[in-house]
Length: 296
Ligand SMILES: Cc1cc2nc3c(=O)[nH]c(=O)nc-3n(C[C@H](O)[C@H](O)[C@H](O)COP(=O)(O)OP(=O)(O)OC[C@H]3O[C@@H](n4cnc5c(N)ncnc54)[C@H](O)[C@@H]3O)c2cc1C
Image 1 (cartoon, helix red, strand yellow):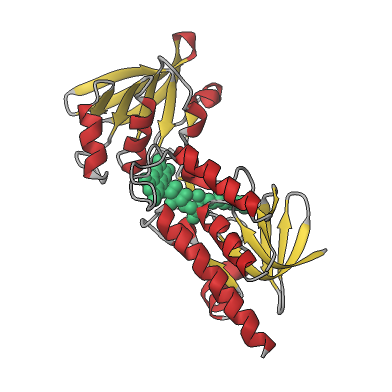
Image 2 (cartoon, rainbow, N blue to C red):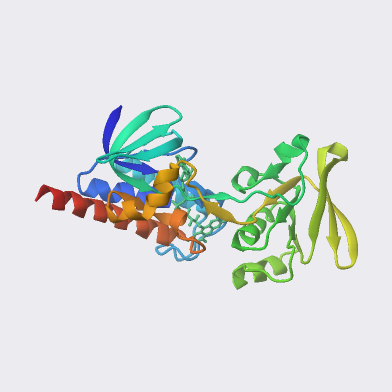
């Protein structure tokens, strides 16, 4: 069992900002990241609301800058997935797919996971054609991609992919929660077809392993074929690793000031990079204050 002062679960903007702030107090954190540094950010087409980039910045480019900053601060990152988390009196027991750790403080910055499409079955054969994040599709050219969803992510994905591909957005209702600026840009794009009031009833594979969608619209049935299908139908907090006891006690433990939640994992619909970064820094500052108090 390895004992750490602070373990941060997740190497997205919240986890990275927390780690950097901790090093400013000479506290050495360990980031446990299950997949890739930067988290969701790599999917963002253009961040226009993150200060310091007056012309906006691509999510992919900001991700590279965050990685560079992390490297400069020599922060330990282990690429391991946290599987279970248990709270003892003085430590949190963190078990990953590779190892186990005890940590005095814990920052949960594990972000969100996509909601799965469950309205009709998807044949296993089509698995390589189905996606929930845009980054694996970003280099595609001359393909047709259907995006299911009508929020910011669906329109952001569409604008990103439409530079080199044809995109169809399917919205099952009349209205969209999307930022007006994204909706306007999508409507102006000749490569994006936005269809409202359309429900997918059956998904199958068609000739050449394309995806065939049988849909219902107010005008009747409509079939759509695509090379890839990308779902953007909402996200939920990534907290599968919490023990049942800890998930019940999450608020109580937070009052104890040894466990902090930072970023999208706790922010409901208010999922933004600047907020996640602020949360990460605030968690680090609270941990430092707590350590100082205990030393008195
Ligand atoms: C299409 C799109 C466009 C966006 N555009 C903007 C924008 O214009 N402006 C803006 O401010 N924000 C934007 N965002 C939102 C922004 O990306 C998020 O708010 C931000 O990434 C949240 O950071 P986070 O660190 O809280 O979570 P995340 O970025 O989700 O990072 C969480 C990390 O935790 C890891 N993790 C999860 N579970 C475990 C586990 N069990 N063990 C180990 N690691 C784990 C994940 O792999 C991930 O790397 C956009 C998002 C999307 C999808």
